[in-house]
Image (cartoon, rainbow, N blue to C red; front, side, top):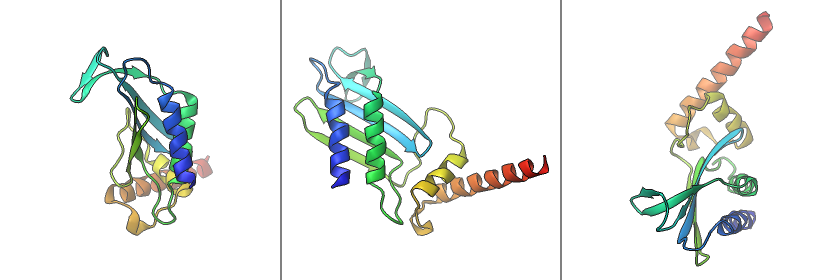
Length: 157
């Protein structure tokens, strides 16, 4: 129920960004507890940029949409199984909406992400070790080692 409501909130916010001539809007995000990156494309034949499935305009995601996506990520949390790391949400000009969630692949970022952020995310959205892909176990271990090293350095000062 909370997941569906959060999804609809994101979809409504994206629908409001559509302009005349747009066929759809695509929202992609990679997200952890303490960081996120977002890409939004309004697909329109007059768009200045092009990918295999059409021309588009890049637009900024409003704060409200980004916060709705954070609530959606929280609502998708499953005890022991964690939550998604990235999502793609598409809303058409006709008003239909669909989502794809990535729970297992390392998310795409626009810059390197510190492993401590994965450790912090694990604290917020715990995932049993059996539900952690190998890349995630590695990033969490690196993050924990970094936290321990920083704490040891701080104690020596």
